[in-house]
Length: 204
Image 1 (tube, rainbow, N blue to C red):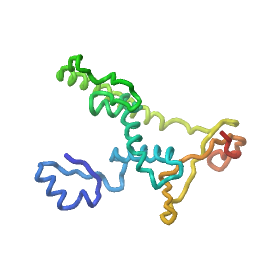
Image 2 (cartoon, rainbow, N blue to C red):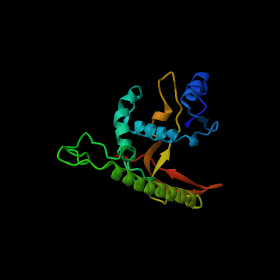
Image 3 (spheres, one colour):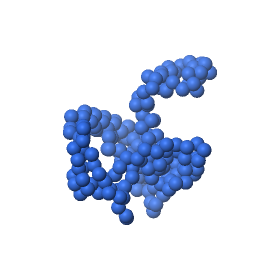
Image 4 (cartoon, helix red, strand yellow):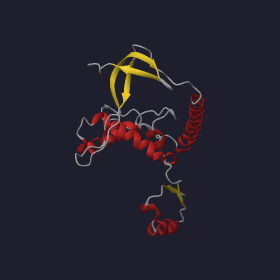
C-alpha cells in the first residue's frame, strides 16, 4: 500500500497505472487534513530549525539541509525514546566529529548474528510501541489541564506574526516564530483571559 495526499502528481492516471502494474494499492488521505501525513510534522520541524540558523539569508536555506537532516536523524525522539537512524538502520550513525566508530564492528570483531539482531529489533519496536502509547495518553491527559499563565517577573517569549512577501523574497515560514525574551511586568484581568504587558526585549 502506498499512502499519499491528494496532489495532482499522485492522482494522475500515469501514477495510478504504474502502481497498478506493480500490484501496489494507492490510498489517499482525507482532503485538507495534513495531520494524517507524518511528513507534515517533520517538515514543520525542518522549517523551525532553518529559521533558527538562517540568520536572515533566506535565499540559501537549502545549504543547511544536510546538517539539519543529520541532527534530526541522530537525535533521540521524545515519543519513541530512540533516534530515527537507529530505528531505520539498527545502529547509530557515525557523527562527523567522532574520532572512531563505537557502533560499527571492526575487522577483528565478529558480526552480530542476523537472527539475534532481528529479535533485538523486535524487542525495541515493542518498546517504541509502548512509548508511543504513553505519549498519546499524556497528550489526552494534558487536554484537561488548565492554561498556563506567566507569573509577574517571569521571562517569556512572544509569538510574532509576519506576512510573506514574494517581491522582497521574504518567507514568513522561514523566520523565527518567537520574539524576546521579555519580562512580565503587569497582569490585568481582561474579558476572557489575563492580558500581559511586557517591557522591551532584554539584551543578551
